[in-house]
Amino acid sequence: MAIAEWIEKDGLLIEPRMTAQGIRHAFTTRKTGSMKSPELRKATAEKLGMTAPLTLKQVHGVEILDADPVNAGKEGDGWLISKPGITAAVYTADCVPLFLWSDDGKAAGVFHAGWRGTEKKMAQAAVAAFRDRLGIPASRLNAATGAHINSCCFKVGEEFTKIFPASVLSRRGDALYMDLDAETRRQLVEAGVAADKIGAPAPCTACHADDYFSYRRDKQDARLLALLTIA
Image (cartoon, rainbow, N blue to C red; front, side):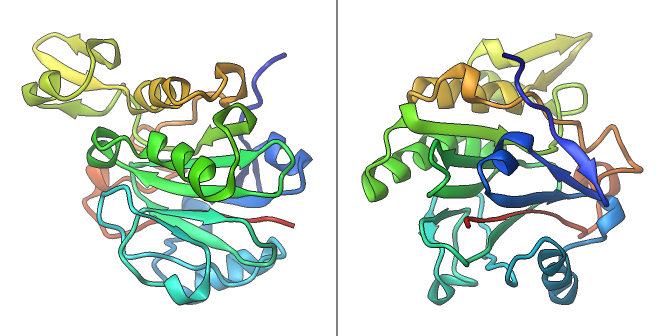
């Protein structure tokens, strides 16, 4: 069975497998505008039939909070949702937006991981949160990554050879590049998520200036948003 790819609808990216399981979600694009605006976040969520999304003070770590209004604005880089009616979201602008959800669609999570979060193994921390807090094993999880900087554009320093496996690094001339998507997948599979339950690679934010914000390309404080809620 072919792995589903993201599709665009009204300036938003939608993952067909999540839609099929009744999980309301989206990944915004440049057409939607910068999600640093609370009014725009709320309007975008309402267009999808969601409540105003909870957001975090993201710190490039692996702290995962339960999706509850009392946790809004706290430091963290991921949300775990097990109750209906609550919308949670993470910002990105080149980093990986990771979605995980259970086979029955009754639990889901959204997580932010740049290279620092990936070094700290955010993908595996997310899988562990489902297991430890909700009793959901990795074998019952599905995953998808939204648009982020791809290996075509993510030039890194030589110190990355001491941090990440050679399989996710490549050289072009004298330059070294990292594949964040490949490393996220590797971590998910190592944590027990089946490879055929991880979605297709997402577009590169840095390559597609008309479609996505990219901090590395633009050096501007504009943000994309990955948001979701369960029915």
